[in-house]
Figure (cartoon, rainbow, N blue to C red):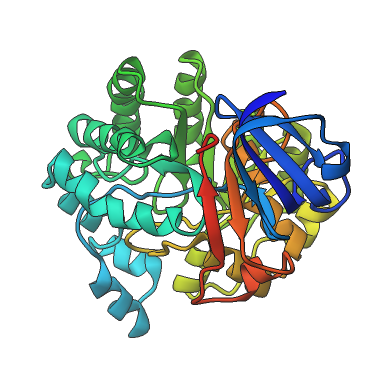
Length: 401
């Protein structure tokens, strides 16, 4: 067999669901051809290989490249002032209702050029790449009008050309009600469904559609209208669900076969059961839980009991989760939500890929998938979420290179 690149002597955490736990292969080998995995397995079973490049891993741990499946990476301005306000005792909803929160970032993003948005996002993207991220989801939602939403989406796609990383773009026009809407949520959703969403989709800039369903954002009926419009365009949906209250977001996401429902702090058993039936992934965002000083964690035991897939993401954004470290999100998921080591690693590989609808291409180490690898200087998988402030990444491979 002729391959482009061959790695031998590694501990391969394949995350292959057909294997127990992390799907570990001791003394494993992995070969890449044309950017995809051509062969993987125990070294003793390896067929004769002729490789352009060969590398001895010397016992290093290899995982799939990490996937950050929920970010708001492209935005203008800073909200450090709100961090001070929260420390002084103001709550998330109080800040938002006073004109801060999402709308403060909307103003800064509307005034930024596309080049400025890209330039400000690159350091955040580079920080994630440095920790082994090979695929990232980036949402719009800080324009709340067509021109700025399009700048965000185009900027997100440009990042994938400036760095060797896979970028999935999500339309989040229903993130907040813009000030010019004068409180008319139904009228704004009309414009989103009739104008903004079709034009963004027609420009080929969308992989999915998202919404923030909450008392300070959009109702169940408004969200359902948006999801119906997305369905008519053949676009999958995701939902910011039940973060601040139980508004039935998990159940609504499931009703529309959503790829994921994200946050979920206030989701109830009926909502989680609906997610289980629909195959909707639970994306946990411990960064927002931590930065907002939230007290009610998502129902992890219920998600486990009903076998809902659990992903973990940074929710990187300027307000509620200014977090540019997926490994720190893993640590927070373990310490704050009591996820197991296997759950945290699966949550940023296999289940994060599932949450993006990309599991057929990435997220596990299997023949035919893209050869996206993170190679780590660690002895135990537990070291990935355990050690903070020290980056154990030895190499990051994207599509075989």
